[in-house]
Length: 314
Ligand code: TUI
Image (cartoon, rainbow, N blue to C red):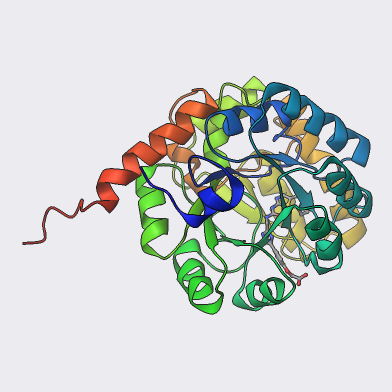
């Protein structure tokens, strides 16, 4: 059994987080992951605080185990969601796409473990100084908003730069990825794309099907010109967006094109106007299965590898 300080810190069986995927990671998915011994995380995305409160209560009704909430810091509702998580006293808060320092005191006073997602050494050191309990080092293999560096180079550099535990994210979908992350110094892992195939994941069937049929080159990054690079499936929409981006479409028109695209993918499975966020590891997501089974399976796969799976060493 793999036990790390992350298990102890949060009172969870396995050091596995389910990523806070906007529009996707709701109370039901988070509860299923937590029931399975990992940390289920409700995504707030661009949703108002009332939605987040409702999802926390849904999760709490389904599990007594610890749950987390992810706050997307670029959201217009970030301030009010930050207050709601403190009121509801969730067990952990993860943050994405920015610097959470201004909320740190409020969350720590509420007894919440604060675990920001970072994509650089500088931001990892900054949030450690501000009192973060751990950091999630997310490489650009991940789906959604991406940084510059890959998981392979980011994780060891952040492990060397901070004393708090590091959770690796980006490009991990099975036990081999988990084992690799631990070898780089991580004390936990966060998976997003793999959980898209969870039975309890409430995305449109078209979205699930696209993930299950994905190949190695099936994702691309758009949005660099506006400063918000986002990795998604290489659909016609993503390719058209990319052409518009590099073809000189004005910023406001580009922004209008992107508005609502995430919801259209998740809820309507809209092939023409939807933005299907996914990580580069999508091709390794092979079947639909319960979230709890995913959590156990990846850790059961990782354990023998970490115990000495390199049979070619004499
Ligand atoms: O946040 C994510 N992934 C996301 S957020 C999202 S919703 C969205 N909608 C429209 C445009 C962009 C996003 C979909 N996927 N991952 C965590 C993450 N955080 N990756 C990188 C970072 C990050 C980047 C810069 C964290 C901190 C940071 O600090 C810069 C600063 O402000 O100091």
